[in-house]
Length: 104
Image 1 (cartoon, rainbow, N blue to C red):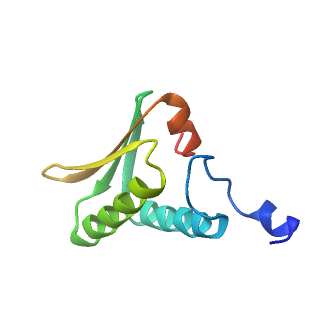
Image 2 (cartoon, rainbow, N blue to C red; image 1 turned 60 degrees about the vertical axis):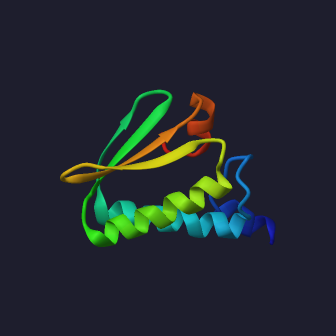
């Protein structure tokens, strides 16, 4: 990878186990998912909550993303809650860990 290429890739948390190119692909997957289904977010300091539309495609994609994040970014706790009308992604950890995820 050239210096120019490394500058164009998003930064990943130091504890993340993904390579820069895999990390860029993962970030793009989250951005696409958010663009399709994100309804709102809440930042509670030690917990970040994202609300998504509750439709089958969103449930499947979110489950895959959370499974993958739980493996590469295990410094945070990832879970999904299902309500009657929404999916809720809960990410918890220290404020530094959540900041490292670039979700703030």
